[in-house]
Each structure stands twice: as structure tokens, then as C-alpha cells.
Length: 156
Image 1: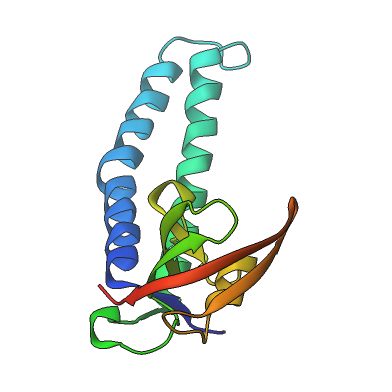
Image 2: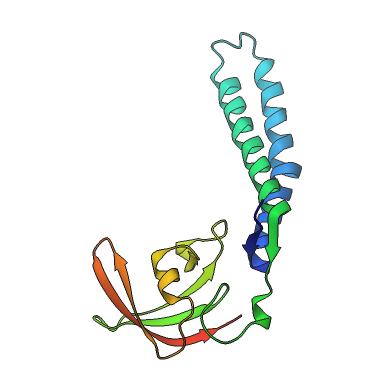
């Protein structure tokens, strides 16, 4: 199987979530199932069915995280420099609106647009990779083509 590139922060986040699921969430849902069983008839026991559904979700997420962690290739982005590549934090300006934004290019499993972390396979990341400070890039979006200028590239 292919390795999954991850930043140290992304790996730590996945590892912390796995530990939380195994040490807190899993025992909690097992206890909830046991308590729901004590209420009698399981066929009409909403608490039991809800707890079992939650248990299924937790176990699925544990398996997913274990697979991700086992294939993780941690890339220390603080030791990188140069043009835009995995792990780069890129400060951009929209050439049409002059709106500025900062994005970090990360792996699929740690991408989170709310934290300005974008998947390295996203259209904007693909357009940025290989470029340098001062370069302009065009990105095809559902709303049309957007042009950005790269103001700075950092590896934090």
C-alpha cells in the first residue's frame, strides 16, 4: 500500500483521536449498552439501538485511524524550503478582489478547510505545487477561473 503523507501535527491529531476513542469513548459506549440491556426488551429499546449505532461508528473510526496511522509517512515540514510543495503554508492574494488568504497544503486525511488546511490533491493545491513566491496561478473552480498571486511560502 502507498504511504500517506502527513505533517507531524496531523499525525499527532490522528493519534490523539485514536487514543480518545479507545480509552474514553469505547468504554463509555460499552457501559451505555450494558445499562440499556438492563431495561429489558431490546427490540423496542431506543437507548440500546442508539448505543449500538454509536459503538459501530466508534469501531469503524478506530479501524480507519489505525489504517491511516500504520501507513503514515510523517514529513517534517519545518526542514523544507523552496517552492510550494507538501506542507507549505502559502499566503495568497486573489488578483481580482485583492482578498488575501493563507493555506497549508496537507494530506487528504488532515485537510480541514476551516483551519485553512487543503488537500494536496485539491485543484488549488495542484495549481500551487511547484510554484514560487511572486508567481501567479490560475485555478479552475466551479465558479470559474480564479487568479492568485503567491505572496509568501513558509514551512512551519
